[in-house]
Structure formats: structure tokens, C-alpha cells
Image (cartoon, rainbow, N blue to C red; front, side, top):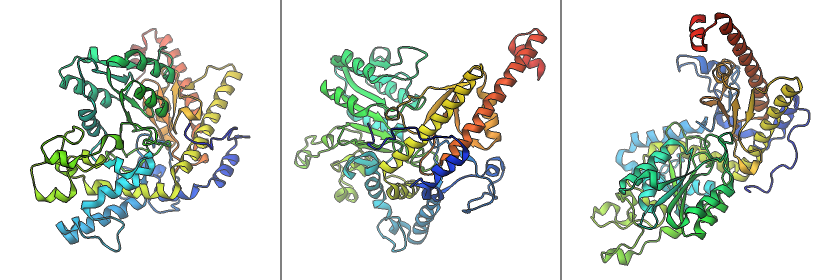
Length: 500
């Protein structure tokens, strides 16, 4: 779906550590790993910041960082960009808004958001005019719904994925209440038909749209589902929504910088995202939004004559016509394009890390990043599958299973692994002890995401070896505790309390 270069055969053949090293040697993006600061195992355990190893070639062993789906690693050039901004502020003060520096890659403060939008556009498959770098994902979602959720007596429902990231659910519910409607009657939740099945088929999404088409005002879905890692068929679902005249928006938090996107060509109405995951821009980094050109035209003459010559929105001065921005007039005429949805001026300091990361993406290109990502995640799946097969051959219960779709066109970088009940805590403790960074979703899921800009096939191989050993250790410990509980003759909680 997203690349014509998806490998047609298994990545591994012998599945040895030596083979992983050979795969690393033939990786066309391997040079980009040095663009990032990868924490050492000692860094993760230190209680101070003063001894961080940030020098290329440091002797301390690096951690295995597979958590780019939660927080991407820091590019080395981030510090240069941030320091350049601080220096411009220090030496120019307010003049830094307008004066460029010959020795800086950072534009003047007043232009920095426009430059960021230009560099972001290729990542999401859009023209620069359709992208704005601003606010945070949740704030942008509210801004988009204020413009695109226009309920009527006939059409008022919102179709939402049932296990959407909580902030999306909160935003939708609060917008519904803001219009004086009842969420119970207004929200249509799309959920897996089988509780044991974590993913949602495209056909189910399409049938839900058909069923509620006559009463639906808006659809909001994730590009990549945060819990399972499932990649939704954005193009097909968007076209189906439009065939019924329904507006559709996408939360791309786990998709941007992860999979190839063509938002303009797919005629997506709007999309929002954050930039601290695969875009490596730092904790709580500035967000972004896309608004299709179909919705951003401005009739200046109509507006000047007191008519609303543009799409309704929550307006602010930074979204107003640049030529009039500092005239301090009271009539709002928006900038044509997504920039016209801006409210306040964006934090220039917050945009600097994003610019640093986007420079690296420009070196690589999204098709190349996606191709390597597919190979890394396929290799991860193959290794995990071999581990499960060995357990079955030995007559042992499987300690885990992958709940992310197996087809590479149905997922991004992330694999979500569901453990047997009672193993998660023990497995996570062991992984942390071994310098492996992944994240968990209680009660029993581990999310693992090889990031193609800085992860290697060796990272994946080493992770699987440590992970399988951790599962075995946690399972053995659980069984030993179970035996001890039986000997104590108490409930699990009571027995564990006595053991402690």
C-alpha cells in the first residue's frame, strides 16, 4: 500500500548474530545512526546528568533503544540548532524576529514556522501551504473540530475508534458536549468484533460508515493505532467517507515520520500530529496539522465587505494576513492555507529541534526510511516467530504472541507483543536491567518499535535474545511463586504478602 519496494521474502536466513551484522553492513541508511545520541547502559542507570556519554565512539556499551514510538532519540544537531536560536535572541533581542545570520541554519523568529512547514510537507505528502507547525496535537484537534465538526439536526454523529488514544476521546466528547449534544447518542465507536482480536478490519470501518452515513457529521481515526500498531488504510477509508459526503480527519501521532503519507492526493480533509515520536523533536514537542487546499481558500473581497469569505474557525492574530499582522487592525483576514488556522505565534525555541530532525529526514527521504523500517520490523517478527515455534516444539506454553497485523502494509514500525498473564512486570524489570528500552501497556503488552534512522538489525537480534530469556525467567519465577502460594495455602495476594 505505501511502498512498491516491500521485500517479498524473509529478511533472515540463518538468524544468527553474524547475519544481523551482515544486514547492518548492507544497510544504505546505516550512516544516519551517528546523527543521534544513543544513551549508554550506564547513562540509563546514572542519577546525575554530568557524566552522559555523548561523544561518538564512546567505549561504554550503548543501550538497545526500541522506544521511538513513545519518544524519539535526540539528534546530535539539535543542540546546535537550539544554541543558534539562543545566541540570536541573546545578541539581537527583538531584532532577531527579522534579521538572518550568515552562519546559522535557523531563520529569523518571524519566519521559522513557515520554514518548518516547508520541510514538514514532504513527510506528510502535502504542499507547504497545507501544513502548519503549531500548538500540540490535542490543541490542534480541538482547533480542527471547531472548524470541521458542524453538527446539524440530521447529521451530528462522530465515528471514532473505540480504543482511540484517551486524549482523542476526551477531545471528541468535550466538543460534542460543547454543542449541547449527548455523547452516548452521538459517538459511534468502532471496536473489534471479538474481544480477543485487537485489530479492526478495513471492511468493518467501511460498513460502520455506511450504516451511519445519513447521521454522521465527522469521522476521526488514527493513522496508526497506538496500542496495536495497526496501520489503517487512510486512502480507502477517506474515499469511502467522501462518497457519503462525510468529513474525515486523522490523528497521525504514530504515523508521521513512520509510514509514507500522501495526504493531499488522498484528499484527507484534515490531520493532526505530534513530533516527539518518530520525528525526534523532544518531549512535548510542537505539533502540526494538515488542512487540504479544498478548505483553505480565502475570498478577500467578501471578507472586506463584511462577509465570511473563508471557512469558520477559532481565529488568532498569527493566522491573519502577514501583510496586515503588525497593523493591529480588528478585522481578521486569514492567510490562505493551513497557516490561517494558527492562533498565537508558535514558540521559535520549540521549532528548533524539529528543524534539526527534519534535516536528517531530508538526507534520507521517506521512501528510503519506510523501506528500511519494513525490513527491520519484518526481521523482528521473524525472530519472535522462531522463538514461539521453538517453545511449541519443546512442548512449552507460548510466553507471548504478536497482536500487530503481520502484513507490512497493515503496520508501521511497531510490534505489540502480548505476554501471558502475570509476566509483564518481571519481563520489564529484566529488560531494564539489561539496558533494553521499550514501553509497556498494562496489563500485558510490550510495544517494540525499531526506528530506521538509528536502529540496526543487531539491535533487533540482541533485543529478541534478551526478551526471550526475560520471558523464560519471568515464567519460571511465576511458577515458583505459584508453587509457594500452594504450599502456604493462601490466595495469591495473601501468599505474596507473606513471601515479601
